[in-house]
Amino acid sequence: MATAINVQSMCSEAEWGARLKLAACYRIFDHLGWDEMIFNHITLKVPDEDDAFLINPYGLHFSEVSASTLVKIDIDGNTLDGSEYPVNKAGFTQHSLFHRELPDVHAIIHTHTTATMAVSSVEGGLLPINFYAAAIVPRLAYHKFEGITVHEDEGPRFLASLGKKRMMLLENHGPVVMGRTLEEAFLNHWILQRACEIQMQTLAMGKPLMIGEEVIKKHLANLSQASIDPMKQGVPEFEAMVRLVDRVDSSWRE
Image (tube, rainbow, N blue to C red; front, side, top):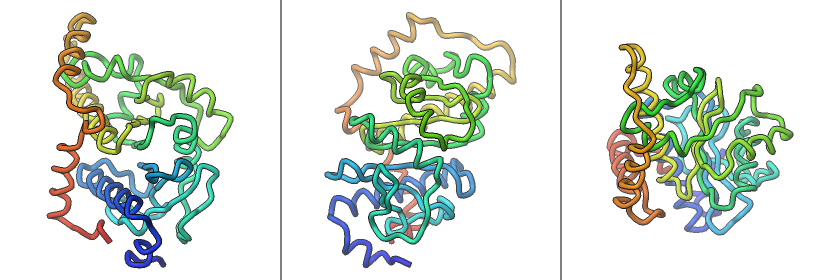
């Protein structure tokens, strides 16, 4: 089995940095309860290597993922780092498509959280009924459920459903959240998760108050004006969570 020392020695400084960041992200998701046993996946492109990305080893829980156990694969499914671990076929099929076809996408998150799966499984999907949803609804695409995502012929339909958006609910399944950076994808997943959690609680209480389209447009405009450099979106939030998980268990650095 590969060790942190020999994996790091085979990596560029940029790749090791990406491994550390992605491993930390898996631990953050575990801490937040966004894990699904050994399933689901978060991927990150390897810097300066257009056809290579990092993915979690199939068989490890998110709480076990570390920088050295991440698997480096290319978009054709070839393992590039000598890892003994397999990767999840559904995760590879879906993520390799987006990494290959969408050059602006460097990070992709797919989860099965209770809240996001519940909202993806009801008519109407995410409703504009809370602060977080107002920021997400106009940017969210939907894709009809076709079963487990292991068939390459679904790829064109994925891309057609997504269009120019970078967040999508797979109906009856769960979200796919993409980002120019891992931090951006993380923050957008967090916002989507909160919007779905609040929707579940709201609908259990009674008839929701809908936010009108004009208010949503104003809300998005205000958020845009207040936003920082696009490549820094989510950085403060992500770094705060890295410090939190580091205090709990720093073995993700191995």
